Length: 98
Image (cartoon, rainbow, N blue to C red; front, side, top):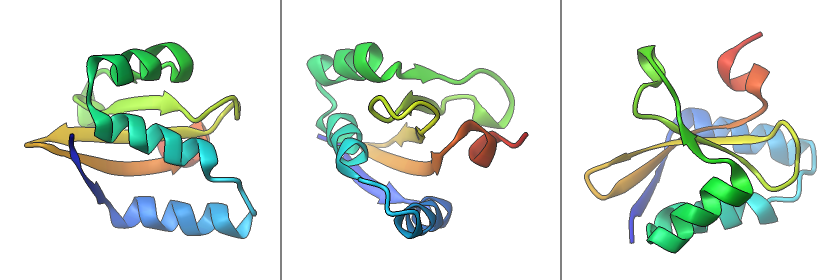
């Protein structure tokens, strides 16, 4: 089981999504699976949420997945020393720019 930490950017993303009245059920499920950190949870993240490591530059070692079937809603995190640091959540454009 991993510990959870949330960056200020992630917290701002959550506030922005709350203003849009987004249902957070699927995001909570993704966070639960990340923190569970079992082989089964990782497989569910890969299959259902298309979790994968990002390549190159500042995003190396960062993991991204799609939140439920919400299309372009992503969760981005990094694992470090028994902690999952949730970096950002939102659309590709909001996270990575246009």
